[in-house]
Image 1: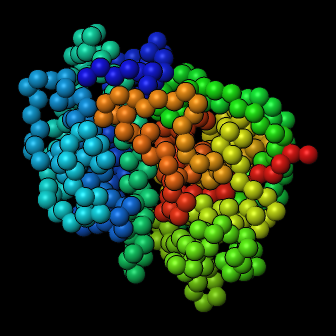
Image 2: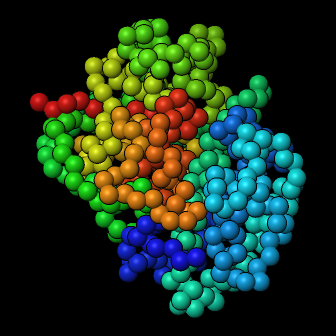
Length: 436
């Protein structure tokens, strides 16, 4: 299967990772999946707490199925899977790749066992490394871009391992810890007030220029016209969102979108996901267990509906994804990523000397942009064309990455997307305003 690098991943074959670099990247990412699963007990691996959440065991197997399906089964004529039925169990939504087990029932599958799943991963790794280390030039040109997509795909599932196990553990009234780091990254330092950073707008370019890896939905580079606008200098904090709650924000229908208000009423939302009141104090379930809500931390686990209502209550709005991307051009990709093993948004300790702070890491930032195709976008051919394009409906774009995202995975052009009612990811708010 020949994959065109201009449609599915890296947009410039001349600057693709070298064979040695890609092999090293593969090994590093595959091992990090094991690192993230290491704190778990065997019972934790198979629980599915809601349809949007997948068991850790499934993530570990699915990412191996990806390499098996899109590389090994096509590159090695004699390749044999440890179990042909894994193709049915561990496919996700790739219709062209075959029949799939129902997503909401992934937590009902106790076999293969966790031990067998790790053996499956080892089998795939041995075959992948043997192929990558011995591939000739023709084979490398044909499959290197698919391998790179598979590595980034696994990084996406690493983020899901973190966010999904948080939801799983939150369902346990014992409030179990994933990791004991209660005090890591915490601070009583109050961040400086939000300042409004002005941007002139005009005709601007957004989208991936092809200098490095990018998913197909980041292409093509194209022009947009932006009116003058302003972005908040930092993320909205828990303390600021508490003011919204105390001002009866969840009881004021006029600041909510109609569907958002219906969602609030149907689900009886009173606060962000994982918040609960105890003895008059707000408590928050974290991957380090239950603790008090730290007022100076960035707000997280709010839906698009909540972000939009808060922005309206605050006399502001959410940025568009084009506004966010243009503003991010002058910002270095630094922040609180999963590499820090903090697993929670961190307070803004002090000014970094830049106007815009916390643009990367901590929380995915909701934008007011619906997830749709850029002008000139074409869905790539084959099963890998199902990766992004077919989801361009009824979802909103988020930018910037989170504390569950790998730093090597994020880009200024990266487009994440979720439904308007989703909350279990690390999702937060940066405010915007129209310019003068």
